[in-house]
Image 1 (tube, rainbow, N blue to C red):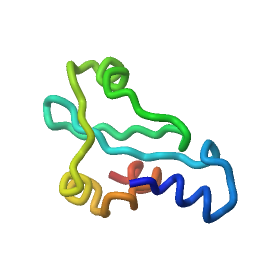
Image 2: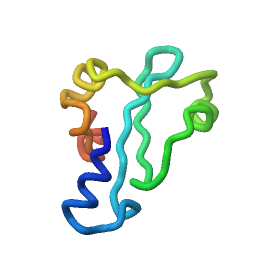
Image 3: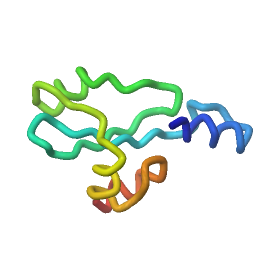
Image 4: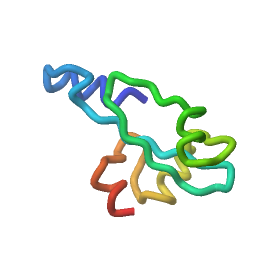
Length: 83
C-alpha cells in the first residue's frame, strides 16, 4: 500500500512532508510503532536493534486491525499514541 504517495499526490506536496506510521511485531509478539518520513523506508534490522530484540516484522492486516482497531492504511500517529 502506498498511502503516503497518494496523499502527497492529492495534496500536491512532497512525499517527505508526510509521516508513515507502521506497526511492526517483535520476536516476542509485542507491537512496535515506527514513525518515519514519507520518503524513507524502514530498516527492520535497525528497528530490532533499537528495541533490543533479534527480529521484527511487518504486522499483518489482521494484526493492525486487532492491535490498533483500524484497517491497514488508516494508521495515524494519533491512533498509535492512543494505543
